[in-house]
Image 1 (cartoon, rainbow, N blue to C red):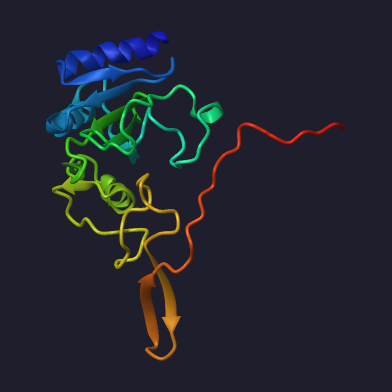
Image 2 (spheres, rainbow, N blue to C red):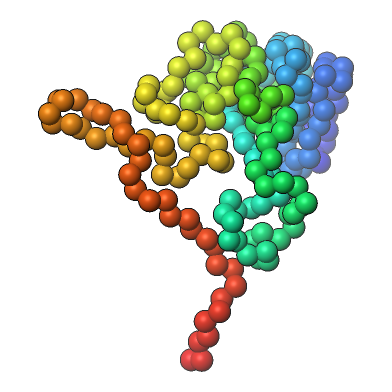
Length: 220
């Protein structure tokens, strides 16, 4: 790790007093993880503390860890070698315990030209929720709406938590790893009703299985 990142890490540790732990990262990056209960206090400290001054929120991302470390491909007929090597087969398929969802904040200090990445895992998988940071960085408004729309993560205290990319009548959250690729509903215009109608998906699901072992031969 570079000397500049080490100095920044020491400064973060001094101000946060153990409320965030360091995560493995590249040599020129600093990544932290905080508990959901501490996210607002940690974010305020990162913004206001001397030597940190992360005044700009660059992005807010959602993460779905479903099958993380168990399967690299979500199909039942994948090969047990190749792309699927190095995973834990003893864990039940599709297990979704606490920590399945996480929210990642990318922060920038314009004055000091330094960056940090902060991750917060949601404690409940069935109803993932973290506190909104819109009161700390106004830019979080649309970012959090996007994460809610695509991952179904709720942000407690958000002033206007509505879908932002999908339609208001959309069912489900497209970036969840258990969301069907064909979706749940399809949209068409009904000439008789003179409006757009939603109907169950009528196309058949097609599973794409990666082939990592070639059985054909080329003799030249």
